[in-house]
Length: 156
Image (cartoon, rainbow, N blue to C red):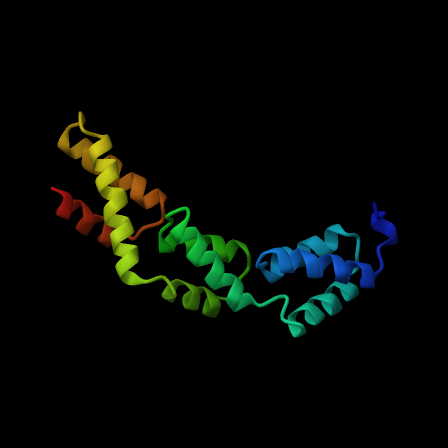
């Protein structure tokens, strides 16, 4: 194993090419990885720009892949996805672009499906409790309040 102190920028670049080639990474995530390898700020900036030039790093591509994956796999709403992308220090332009890449029809269908499942799982509850718990569940998933209200209205 390579010692952190003896890692040259060239070795770090190879390591990062593999790191970024394995899955899409944010600039912030990659920067933190470089710092964890024991590199200095000047080297980190040079390596980041090199990775961007060679198209290993692309913030827009990352944001769209992240948003699509979190929506399809984890069934997150746009609010939660936006918050997570902000945590990864993705630009607001790329966040907007990524959120627009989520199909509205699929988004509403997923929301309706989640609302229906939750509603059915609360069968023994009183109506207002059922409504509050379903709303709370969907808000935690990151869906917009006005869309949640409309979805719950459809279920009744």
